[in-house]
Image 1 (cartoon, helix red, strand yellow):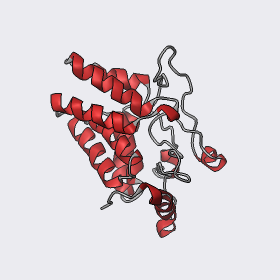
Image 2 (tube, helix red, strand yellow):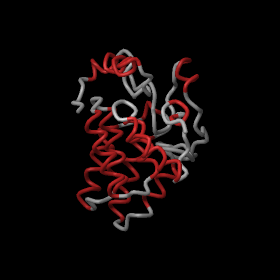
Image 3 (tube, helix red, strand yellow):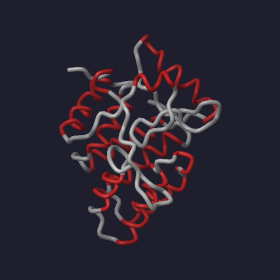
Image 4 (cartoon, one colour):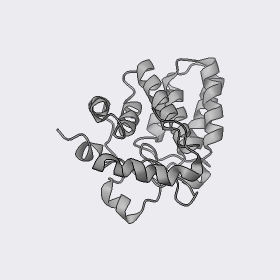
Length: 211
């Protein structure tokens, strides 16, 4: 089981994960010199290195207009995912909190992201609706980006798909996490995500889950 890793040690943790057992690993979000995450596995794209660009497919780059925390329009972590989640909430206050937190977490301009604020918003949503799966999906991503808490992130993704077995983006994110320590279980979640029409933005199929 994984424990939270201090942010200063995140680059070393990533290197160890990538080289462990001589197997290729998906590049998890970490820090480069204490800076922002290098690669975003299941949200709007960061600015990857040349090596990273060779390993991943390019997600949609079309972005909302007229929003200070604008999302990409399509794909994982995009406006479509947010709108689908909002349609499941009846409480207007919970809707407002969720939209704010989702935008804080996945805003296309990564310099505007506020993971702590997003996590606080999701916890408030869960106080109103403890079984709202999308809140756990956002909490998972926040956990990974505010302490490199792989164990916490994985548990949140697992809770999201337990509550909503048809939550494709959460299955995809969980399949990404499981490339690190349980590829066979990850394959099940990847297959489910593909059945639900989630785009394979990080080429996990060819890299880790070939037919």
